Image (cartoon, one colour):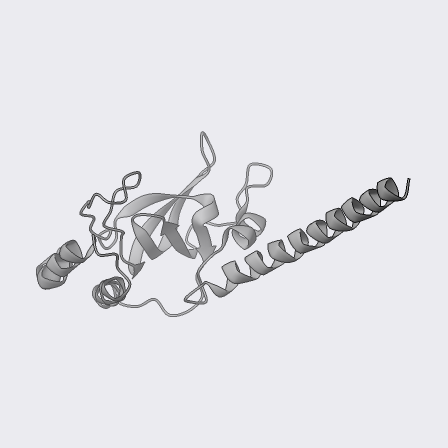
Length: 180
């Protein structure tokens, strides 16, 4: 009976320790996500869903708000809310005013295949998921300068497969930016 009792005590202690470490790990992971933000206006999924979720068919955002919108592969942008759609999917139409992060230059499902993407043009209107929107506070940078800064940051932090495309964009940046 002593062996059985010792096994029960050992398993109980092991379960309690793993439960406590799991809670601590979750807290550390959430803190890491918050620290990962390179700039103060970057939304994270935890705060965005609380602040901007749709309640009773109405969004916490208003038309005309200046927001920070993120697309996983097409970059991050500062823009103005033009329209809020609640059906069939919660999306926000945003008019692009500045570029914060340059688009990724690889395929979504095949990350070893390069795909050329340009940043959205100035004053163009694009749809973003409501959970990728956050209010923007601060001065809105000039579009041409913001794209150049985003491209420089992308060149510093790019993957080897993206480098040829980004270098091509950096050579053509003067011609491309005048389109807006």
